[in-house]
Length: 115
Image (cartoon, rainbow, N blue to C red):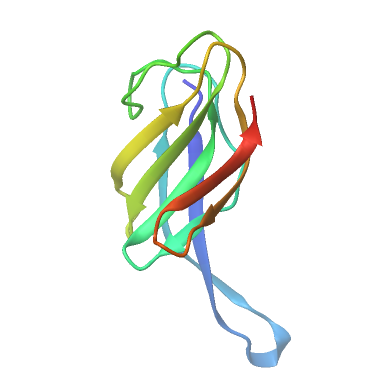
């Protein structure tokens, strides 16, 4: 099984020019095929948006099959503790590769890549 692996680390102290890193949570998301995190993690007041692309089917944590045998955009929304709230894939008949994600002013998300 190949999966997204996300580890959230916060920096909370800059004393003596050394930042201490503290693991907040880690979790795995994915199906039976290659699922690749690629874009930045977007922090919201209620959790995180994790984004990348996936070749996988709807198995394990992934709720939708890919449109074809090519990769699709795949995003996962988690709560503040790394628990999956929802996931969504976007794709068509050929490859869709996600390279960037951002939060919009209205609270939605902008996804960028190619198809």
